[in-house]
Image 1: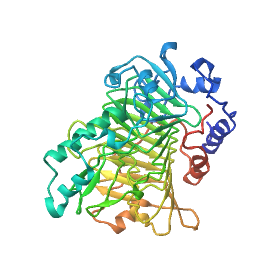
Image 2: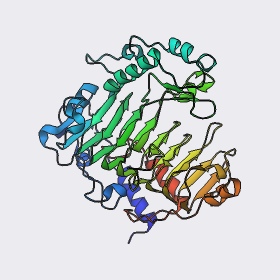
Image 3: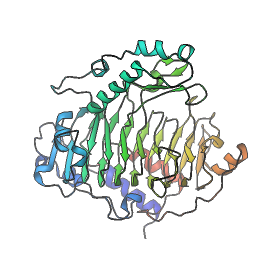
Image 4: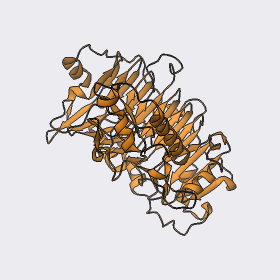
Length: 450
């Protein structure tokens, strides 16, 4: 059997030693792509590689026929490759293999010109009017209602039709070198057996955030659009992608009603009874909300669902939900965290009936971050946390018991046993001190041989 270090170094050599990709700007058909790209597009999730390997496994669009294998360079081409009609593509179960070349913009109109938020707005909606009507000093601390809120909802529906790209079952979407999906959501809803790899997701902005006056003590602005949303689906593999807000971070938004006007939601949310998801070797950078697993505290259909594996991901300069878990058996191992800043909230969120198993993760923290705050209790009772290491500021790396630190600083205590032990792991778990040596260089888009 390979030792963890040998396995990790073999992977590093495979990826780093891959030949540089040729330019794809002149390619007009998938059969003109380099062998490395065609090979990557045909790959299935390896056996035992996390929860997405459970049952029938995850093959995506590896069985796609020639006429369902496409290279796309625009929103219209992406929608066409997914089935031809964004309103019905979610039900297209024909195997399909899609390569993204260059930048696909969700705000691209039918004629190829960019759309603005104003062009997507309902005629009855203006932000200035919304702010004047629902200012808590005028409206009070109750949910917005009436014509202006109804116009905002219609505006959100307009944007959903434009920027939410619906993905059907048996689909693989692979980015060629430098591929970007900007201003859009990949919606995987009732669409099992999906693979998304080697893409940079940028700025899935919501033009029409909702004011929620009872969310928290002071209210909050909430947005609708994730970068990838997985709902009511199984066997989904999200691998070697980068998630960022680009040059439009939430930190740069204005403040209304004393709260930040937040135009982004999650990077990768797994909700609404989805299950059997593996997210591996992704890079989440410069974002607020990142990974939400389970959308409601209501006990019901989510019980015994929401089974997710997160391994070898890099979380850097992000603030919360790394992940936040409800109900699911979630395996979080060999991830690297680079965390800090005044707005940092927490890493691992322990929610209602969650069973989070965190092993051999590495945390690099700003000096001001208290290790006791890496965990947050969202109504859960226990987690398994073992093998964590911390480097704080310029200090030496050291082993850390995050659960003990949390329990020493907070009441009530969280228990130490999540009640299960992961078995779906492809390779031996790396010792935490080795994680930055492998994850830092290799996680994210444009690290695979395409």
